[in-house]
Length: 338
View 1 (cartoon, rainbow, N blue to C red):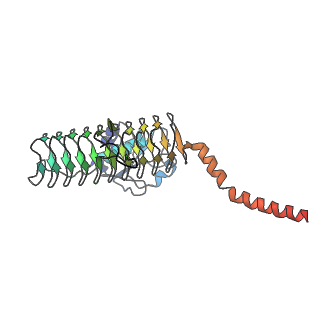
View 2: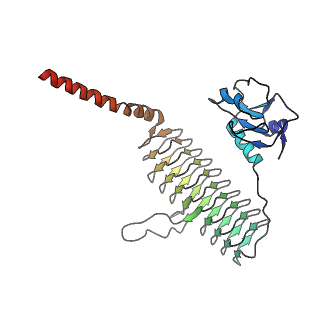
View 3: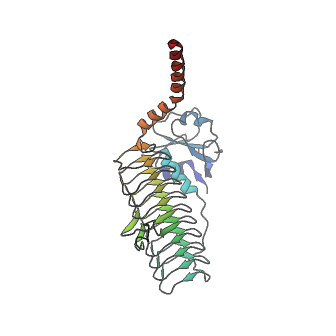
């Protein structure tokens, strides 16, 4: 793909500085890796060094300083969001033939929409419904009475268990399991059959080998636009809001409700049966053991306000010096007693 600088400025709804009509942009890359035909971006504190990049075009914020050279700059409100849009624009997409393979199993009662691709060795069970334009790779299992929207993409060996409901443009990476039984046990027998389901709303993406457990009653829900990384576990009856980001190795226990626009960094864990508000952020390895109000930024175990955690960590680093000082004082005191 080739784009002119002006075309990219229009695509990003940005303000163009120093147009270069002859320049053809063919890719998107980071500051260090970018070449003369790439477009890149920078945010503070990297803006002051971005002129050292070899990128042919830079995306910067409206308030960022001017570059010392005359290369094209596209000014936007949110450079990170603009860069994400550029990555999607230049992303190479493999062309998939829209046919249902005769080597796939399609149950007689399954309903398949228009322009669907179902590749060899996929298994579509009785009562399943597949929306228009969905692509299903080999070894995908779609269980009984599963409802799938339009434009979805399921990579090899992903699993959607019986009764689950997926919206439009849902992406499942390889090995994702939607609707496995939750971990609901007591000492002498299993508590119920986890006969209810999982609901993934529109434009949800689930990473490789992540597991979303089905509810024991009602639905486990992942809100529209939420993106879940690899190796994440959501327990039964969790409700995760819209546009959340969940990074690798996060574990959310059963019956947790989280609001919209929350960010869970790597290895965050929670106890069950708590409520997390909207617009919350949790640093890596945070242990969430209690309800969290809206707009919180937390870290540590148990979770506490981020600034308090920083002060606590700074104090802990001084403990060794304090112990050394105490030993010196004890030694001096012993000498005085003599």
